[in-house]
Image (cartoon, rainbow, N blue to C red; front, side, top):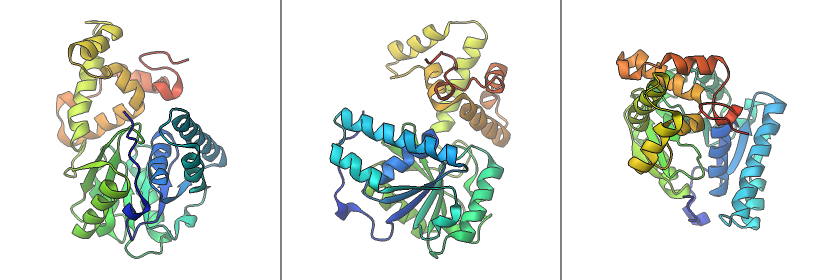
Length: 298
């Protein structure tokens, strides 16, 4: 359930007022909305004008729906939209106090983004954050000249609704950066933060991914139908959403990528992605975002 809590401007951190979000897909747009609804000025970057317009539309639609459902007022919606700006040039992030990337779960892509951000951001103590689900933060940190200011800030989908945020310090992250991130998440954003070690999967995915993969293997083996697997967990274990529906919501490409990262680090069979998952990714059946996954989405 979405929190209706509002945060007064006095809750805003003294040293973080201007935020940059790299990526405006499902997660990036949600993260940008969280920051903007909390009173922060947010600039969102995408690689192309087309992707940027899709992201702008995604944000406008989400905020309009929130207003229609009474989660925010129309005035709050308009004020939030006014705090959002958009760009295709990371150079415009020069004055940001904090930048978080939420792009594809690919180490090379993320590393290149961190290298660019390190060059363009002018504030000496700006925080560089990643929403990665599984990539070691230390690898991103050492790609910059400020490894002590790099930290994982991992939101969950949908970010405006989910109250949990994982904070993942790298071995290089300073105590000051951790404190500032905790103050931001627990204060202005009004989220509940848990701290995780910099190991693939962190806390939540280390528990969640094996569960999802087990459900996929069960379906792949013909042990039960997709509906019965999901109903079993929803009705038998009181889960709000069954594992196959949840995998579709997360995105099957993301599930596969996180599983691959965890298997590469730990070599545990429970982290090995089933062949069916990879075939579905290859076919472009990624779940809700493509209109087809384990279930069809009209």
